[in-house]
Amino acid sequence: MNRPRHRARPFEAEATISSLAPGGDAVAHVLWQGERRAVFVARAAPGDRLRLEVDPSCRPARGRVLALLAPGSDRVAPACRWSEACGGCDWMHLSGEAQREAHVEHLRAALPRAWRGAEISAYPAPRVLGYRTRARAHVRADGSGRIVVGMHATGTHRPVAVDACVVLQPALERARGLLADVFGGCRGRGDVLLSTGARDLPVIDVQWRGELAAATFARFERAVAEEAIAGARVTIEGARRPAPIGDPTPWTKAPDGLPLRLPPGGFGQAHAEVNVKLGAHVAAQARGAGAGKALELHAGAGNLSVVLAREVARLTCVESDRDACDAARANLAARSLDARVVEGDADHHAIAPATTLVVLDPPRSGARSVAERLATSRVARVIYVACDAQTLGRDLALLEGAYAPESIATFEMFPQTSHAEAVVTMRRTTS
Image (tube, rainbow, N blue to C red):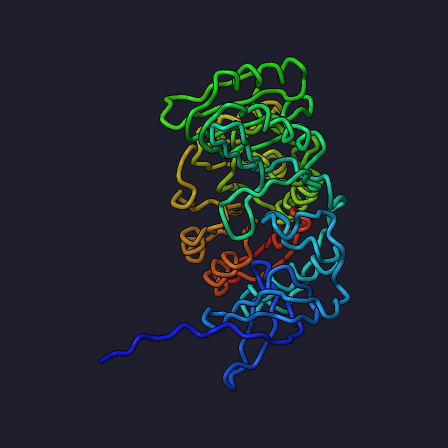
């Protein structure tokens, strides 16, 4: 007869943080039943000496901080008193230098083994507070008049009320402060995307599940009239189309320094100044590749297209979202740039034999199918822009036999967090 397995009981231990793991947690090691176990600890810094409550039933084991016995040299006082409760800025307790170094090392560890000795350039952020041009807030309204506006709590989907977000641009933070009043009298919950719009005024995109009070729309209209926001777009679950108020179009700064139109609710980089650095880097890599026919996959609203179109003779941009395609065409036309924008599945778009350069900027899930096809293609140069080092490493492992790295760089697109952008430029080494 099989006996039930008993859950290992938590125990207390002292440990020193040795490193930072991809994903943001810190790592320490403890002895448990004669075995040396790695313990993942949230919101800890290398060199921290801690007293932990260790749960060995998890793999890896998890540690809860009971006391900070001695801080490591990389630990700093967080600029936000909500940093431990809010899930947004998981590295606010680390110095900027420690964040940059960890991003470089996480990228290096994700590279194919033969590439790990390559030089990795690190591009810092000129601002580490008040920089975010977009953020998602979460609203809950129970109909009793109590409105909770917050960010997701660490490791949950529960909103934690934050009285001030220090990484948001000031105008967006002021708009976030309007939400409790705007949703007064409502019932349900919603995701609210805050972005920068026309004249640098905020725009608000709402996805609501439940009942919205009629006064909500009047309050948005008043905010537009008072120029607190440029516009809003409200989508109620089950509705056929969203309701626009004012001008809900988000805008950001493109890498060429000019305004870049985004689709309502669409993707845009979080740090405008770092985005300019990243775009200039990609343009320089494309220029050095001497590309003739170029293919850009996951092109979005044309953030990189507007600089690539100046560097290559023929550019085809592929994006699956129709609104993003429309925005990309408008952004290229506003600059009198010639490029073909195709609405389609970037992961399965055919790579024409004459293509000499492929640029891809996939979502966090990566672009495995593209990497598989590139490995057997004749494409001479590949520029891969990634926001996740682990999926990037998975895809580069498929390309290792056919390509060698020319340039590897990280960009501090999300200061105070464990996330960064990476750009890897490769040249073909096999026929």
